[in-house]
Image (cartoon, rainbow, N blue to C red):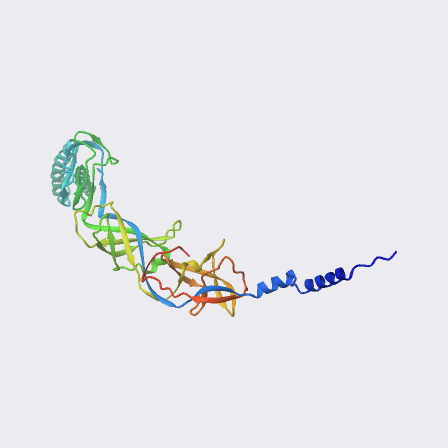
Length: 361
C-alpha cells in the first residue's frame, strides 16, 4: 500500500527547513560578542607636583633627668628636698650620719701630729748618724700612711652628703629623715626643664631627610603650634618596627610644656615635581601586590605597580607606569587580559597639593 502526503504539508516542511538554515549558530553569537569592545573611562598619566606631610607621635623629655641616690648606707639625718622647687647645682639635698667618720678623722689628725714630730727627730738623728737610713725612712712612711688614711676618711665623709648634680626642678621625695637608706634608695628625682627635647620616630624611608637643624612643628593637645629643631638621630634603624628615632630641641619656653607629655609632630618634606598620581579607583588589589589596567593598541594590559603616598582620591605610583600611559578607571572587574576595549571618556583629575603619608611599599 502506498501513502501519499498532501502537497501543502510538504510545502510547510520545506519552508521551515529553509528558515532554520538562516539562523546564526551559538558559536557565531559568541564570536560576535567577543569582537565587540567594552567602552571604559580612562586617565592619562602625567607628572604632578606634590608636597608630602606626615604626622607622627612624640614625647617631650627633660634636657637632663636623673634619680638621686646616696653613695653609701646610713641613717638619714637631714633631708633638704624642696618638692617641685628649682635648686642650683651643688646644693645639699641630704646628709647621712657621719659621727663615726668624724671621730676617725680626729684620731688620724692626732696620729699625724705625733708622726710629724717623730719624723723631725728622726731627721736630726740621721744627720748625726744617730739612726740608720732605714729607721728614718720608716718614720717618713708612717707619716705618708696616716695622711692617706685622713684622705680616705674625708672622702667617706663627702659621700655622706648628697648634692644636686645639676640645676633643675626637684620632684617628690620618697623618704623621710631618720630612715636607714642604702645606695638603692631613691631620695627624689631632678630634671633640667629650662631646656626640653622632643623624641619621635619616622618610617625608614624618611630617614635620609632627618638632618640636623631641620625645623619641625608640634602640638601637645591644643591648637597652639610649637617649634623644635632636629639635633641628632639614632645610629641605626629599629629592626622590629623599621623606624628611626629622632631627637630635637624645643625652641619655645612655656610652662605648659612638661616632660613626659604626648606630642603630635608634623613633618613636611621637599615637593616632588615628577610624582605620577592616578585615581585610587584604578588600583586593583591582589593577593601579592597591586595591578592597574592600561589601554594599549585597543587592548587591555595588566601591569604590576608599586604605590606610595595617597589621599582620599589619588595614589602615587612609584613603579610600573610612565608618563603618557592611559589607565583604565571603569569596568575593572569585567575586563580580562588582552580583551578589546574602547575609550569612552578621559577623566581629568588632579591630586591635592599636600598628601598624607600612605602605605609602606
